[in-house]
Length: 345
Image 1 (tube, helix red, strand yellow):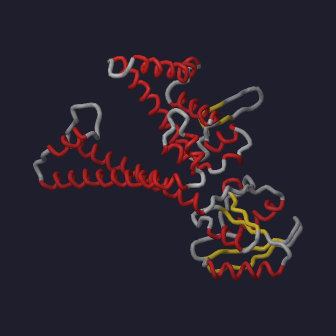
Image 2 (image 1 turned 90 degrees about the horizontal axis):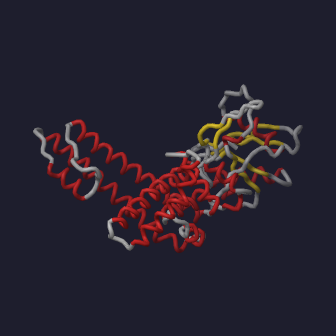
Image 3 (image 1 turned 135 degrees about the vertical axis):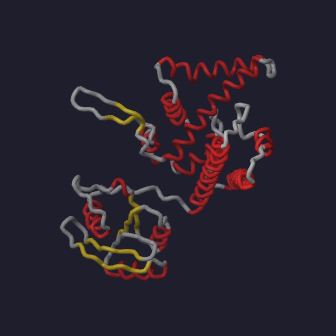
């Protein structure tokens, strides 16, 4: 099936590679119409198996077909086998080309979450979108101040002192003043939205079926609630991965390779997997390393017991010294630690 917002195109393939393939037609995408069409198709055959490509339509059709007692797979579009010279992206042709691959077992089905899991994932993704919106609004304020030659005299921005400094700025034209006020207000609204979503996540996690996994992941150093929930909602059932290497491939944390003969060429990470989890792991590890340095510095200034600085110093040595010894600095070292942390978890 080729699913869309208004119409679903359906093709029927008989059993076997030599079976007949025929175009059934386009039907309305509503649940009532699809239930009627599925019943008509199922009445003609002893066994039916449906499949369609994953996309923005979601998993509603999958759940409808499963509720009617039939098998259904949601196929990963990027893993559908195609000829090297095939550059035609016409829906009906994709249906006909996918049919022999289905019976040969060459189509890869994606993992489909239940409705409760999908609702939690939507909430986490809404929080990620809100964080990105907050970043954009803050960048607009910074660019506006830079354009007018206003430079904040301190290093750390977006503190209470920085907000007071913004309020003290005066411009010669009222339009500039209004523009700055509106941009600062947009930052405030975006920050409150992020805080509301984070409170909602904290509220719903205890009643979630995968809450024990979230709590278990938080026992790892550097993994807070948001990181753990993001990982669980995006990865889902981790037991479907046969090895940590396969999980790293799903997250895009394995190096790309272009080797031929005796020549081995390895490049950066493939970044071909789930970008949300990969970004969250790298961001958290960068913060983790910065927090460790701050705690050691604070302990040196006698604001914490001496043993606190010693513990953090020993932790930094165990975690980052081997990385530096292999000359893996910057983002390369962060990716390596992220891979090790997920494999240990």
